[in-house]
Length: 527
Image 1 (cartoon, rainbow, N blue to C red):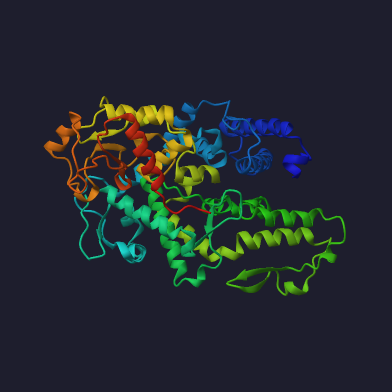
Image 2: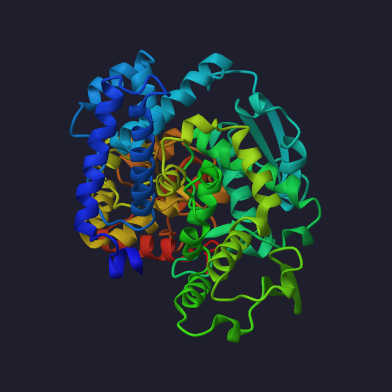
């Protein structure tokens, strides 16, 4: 309220000028090597200016008040900085450590992927390796427990390698499936979907307009919950390591835990509280602005909550129930309460999760991102699909090709009949994530593909000469299971980012069947 609505002590326009000056000042000080001596007066000025700039940047990352491109450097060329980074120049490294946001986000994502690729080369990890780092046999009915048992105790370097998965069905038989990266992607997505589902009691959703995930304060009701958090952190790290995009939205304050930003001296938990509980934040700030005698409210340094129908009281300070909240200590009360809700209450769960995540993803690799940028790294860009990019990097099978009439109809429907939200739903139907990858579809793994298929999945034995010829020459076939109604719904193998599309006779039939398929493909949603 003070910063955005009352705009005290500065108007937002003044803060734009201040932040632009600070950004320019800090870049020039680093670039001209004026802070190499940490005992110099200039270094103390630099540190003060940097602290203020980071406060403004953090505020903007939580709720933007700057125009697009405001934080990018106008003083040095990105190419010059990139060249210096490649040479491990001290000043370029310092810029990346101190003010990474002056570099375009896309360039930082490219740098992140190159750091991962460099480590894979050092570890000798290749997709073509005949010997996988680990081979898993996973029962569908015990997916999480089997994955936990087989992966949690292997070394981090092995987990970074190629993992092969064989699924076992309910009858105890091996499922048919190509032993390639797609099967592991399906395994990883299923693990993530199950453990992040609030019904599992490992994670909860925030009490905000847009519910986000964070560790459940009551996860201890589940056996061995801290080991599970460590395992889940590793699985998220593995997904990020492999560039697998996940539709998993995390609360901003929890992302800052992953980044380690909450350890900085200027961090204030009250600023992050709205990302956990908007109503609770409003109530606390109401106490701050209360004009009467706060002691009349009967508050003490305790927090009470309902746990399975039983009210539990937590002491915010030693003997907190005997310490009344007064006009003199209410600021301390507000910050202590915010710290308890964001940190103390989930300290053990968060520590285990972060340890698991960091065993795969080095802290220095993500230090160049803000919390919202880390979310984009995990979940892709929250933008409309760039169809020209998708068309350029799609692979066709079963007789389909770029000039096939069904393919042309598909692109026309997506471009002219679908809105951005519907295009996102289409992408989620095929890949399990509604957002495109940050660096474009050429970085989607496995590659986006479309295959002409005329039979149900249980009758699909792969491409044959006959099926390819039927697809190529636009000859419809009939399913053995339903010979009188050949126009089945499209399906998708999200593990391979594969759309299975029948050879429909008209655009209208394709449009209708595609709409049905997408709307019927429902998974768990946050609510």
